[in-house]
Structure formats: structure tokens, C-alpha cells
Length: 20
Image (cartoon, rainbow, N blue to C red):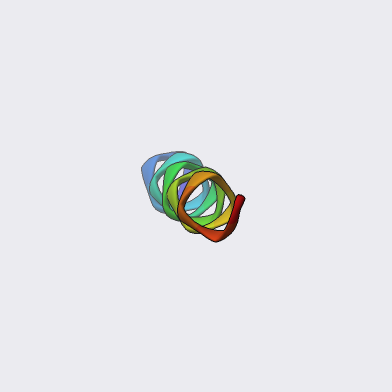
């Protein structure tokens, strides 16, 4: 499940970068 969390964080970061 740790990998899933890491993947989710990466996705959120990508969204944040795209939003800026």
C-alpha cells in the first residue's frame, strides 16, 4: 500500500504543478 500512497502523492504534485 506504500507504493499506492507514493503514486498518489506524485499525482497530486503533478496536478499542483500543472495548476500553477
